[in-house]
Length: 218
Image 1 (cartoon, one colour):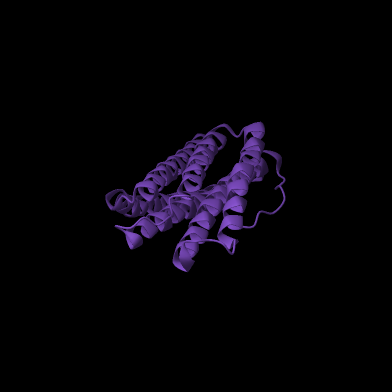
Image 2 (cartoon, rainbow, N blue to C red):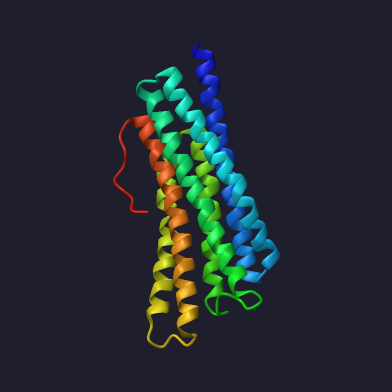
């Protein structure tokens, strides 16, 4: 019985890491589409989000099955409950990449972003992809040091978001209201994506220690 439970738990972890890899690839593609005004690549991101959603539902089903059939306790219970939340976080990361891709499709063939601010979003994409890849490692390893480091790494995204906010709120912004609204929304999508990656790391800390770090607003 215990061997079957361990095998099921391992399958759920593998599914979560697969989802997290998928959303890292999705953000990389969505950012490239944003930088290049590439409607084909943006549509690919939108189409592939359905696959992430299917894995999300599968992960939740596996977790609920473990709760009902195995009645886990202590660390095992924390692992299963946290897996449900983690799957939801990863699904939201996928949805946010879809929102970025949809902005490209909405404005195509025109670029979404003015040329002077586009590089900041390219950097946001790079940071976000790196955070997602580190989240994969944290899910697999349950390494507390790496989990804590992921939250520290999120500071780079926060700095970029704050910088963009200052630019967009400047009364001398020369690109009009529509461009400002697009940029504000996109910056928020990237920031929230990173926040969900941090939430995953915090849940790994909870699994290992039984204590959840302070709340994160996402």
